[in-house]
Each structure stands twice: as C-alpha cells, then as structure tokens.
Image 1 (cartoon, one colour):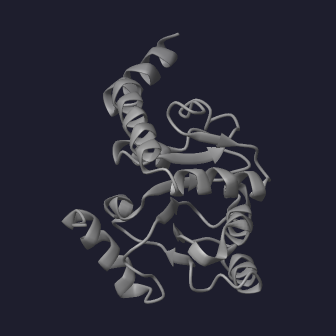
Image 2 (cartoon, rainbow, N blue to C red):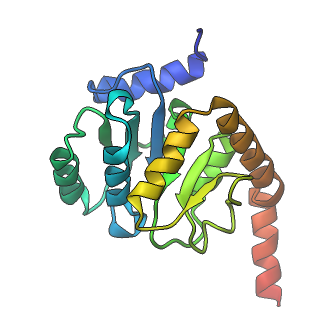
Length: 198
C-alpha cells in the first residue's frame, strides 16, 4: 500500500530523532506539555494494557517538569521501544500528519487548542470526558470520550480506533467539519469581542 508522502515525511522527521520508531503501523500522538494536568501517566498505563504483540507507537510532542516521572513509568512498563517523549518541536502542528490517532487523556483543561489542530488535520481523537474537551468532542460523533484517570478505558478506546480504519476516517472527518464551522479564528475572535461587549 502506498502511503501519503506527507505522512512519510512527517514520520521520517520523527524517526530521524527517535530511531526506536518504525515507519509502519499505527501511530498515536499527542501535543501536550509534560505536566500532571495532561494525564500522560494514564497514557503510559493505557499502552501497557494494549496487546503486546501489536503495540502501536505513542509519541508525545512537548516538554515539561513531568519528563523524569514519565520516563521512569515508561521504563517500568517496558515501553521504551513504543512510547516516545519527543520533546519540544517548533513545527509540531506540521507533524500531526504522522499520527493515525490523537490522544488527550487530560485530568483538567480549558479549551485545548491542540484538539482544534487535530481536527483541522482530520485526526480521530480519544480524550477525557471533562469540561473544555467536551466543548469540542462529542462521544461517538467527533471522537471517543473516556473517563479521566482510567488507563483501561483509554486502552479500550485506543484499541477500538487502532483496529477500525473506517471509524478513524469518519470521526476525523466529523471533527474537521465541526472545528471548521465553529472554531475558526474568525468565529472565535467574533465570540470573544461579543463577550467583552456584553
């Protein structure tokens, strides 16, 4: 099967810095600060619960003060060859095409801009069912929502998307339509101005 050259380029960029990654297979990605609110420890737990014979790659683009704890958790779970902390990347949005699934297992959020970027990249999303995220993701329509703090539920949702390509396409397309219609810079600016006028 011929892969989109844009996907190949994005994956090659990440592989050049992280040689444990393999170009083929399903890639799960996140753009997130390495802080506790992002719930990335639950992502490590989720990957540990997924089928060992076909573990997807999980790449987190971002940096923060939880790097040491996350690195230890990854090592303890023996996920060093599949869970990659890619660090800060200046062109992070351009690398979204490397991913098949976008994950955001946060325990607390405002309005996560990275979900809007994932939507514009037509990525299917698995995220926590918390305020802020629920403003963007409707379960089963524009993504899959799971309880926060629950690595097993996160693992089940990720496995479902990993194994169902048509569902990934449907959810990614629906999220793209929603973000384009309701969260464009022009619409968000107009809404902010209207709030101040009130």
